[in-house]
Amino acid sequence: MMLKNKVAVITGATRGIGREIARTYAENGAKIVMTGTNHARLQALYEDISLKGAECIAMSGDVREEETAEKVVQEAINQFQRVDILVNNAGVNQRSSTLDMAINDWKRVIDTNLNGNLYFSRAVLPYMIKQKQGKIINISSTAAKSGHPNAAPSYGASKAAVDYLTKHLALEMAPYNIVVNGLSPGPIETEMVQQWHDEYRKKVLTKVPLKRLGKPKDIAGAALFLASDLSGFITGETININGGTYMN
Image 1 (tube, rainbow, N blue to C red):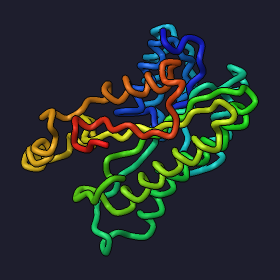
Image 2 (cartoon, rainbow, N blue to C red):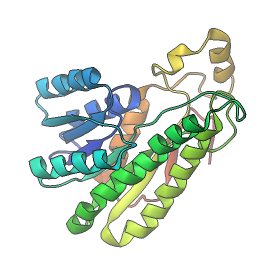
Image 3 (tube, rainbow, N blue to C red):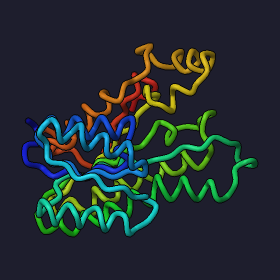
Image 4 (cartoon, rainbow, N blue to C red):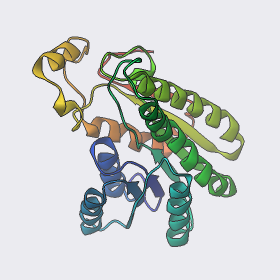
């Protein structure tokens, strides 16, 4: 029970990595406040977590709207009186070339992947500062590190900005004992990856030294470590979880 009685806010919890993080945190004693845009999936996860005995709040909302962050965090405070952990997981990808990409698609990806992180961080930080402790975990991507043939420029740009935001917040919040870190997943077996054709999957695997795709639980395990007391002296880092595809 590495997170016993901790209160965790998780965005983008309705599928893949976010869903697995919510389940893992709940199994380790955390009280979960989660949000997503798919109400049916969110409700199913709420029932799953609640049936296992964990306290949970599920709120539909779009992270592109600052009001969503304010409402979700306020509900966490109303119900649990604190926020110990924030996982900024909500994100979208869009596949097109620079010239074919619609400007509205660029804005949608930036608004979701970057601005959503800022809104939720700004919403929790006053409470974490008052508590003199807190953990923020931003989910990035290997697309932040190099050009990527399977993503629009908006995706890599948004994730590179998330990496900088992680470092900036870590430095700014260090005096308040708030640590801010990121996770940089490589190819993970999610619904998005299941859309790949066999030829592209084989091409991706040739670049992974461990010769397999990751699983959501690989990311959730690292997210558990960063949320726990075991990582108290780590801040400003974005950890690669990609089977050795990128090594710092």
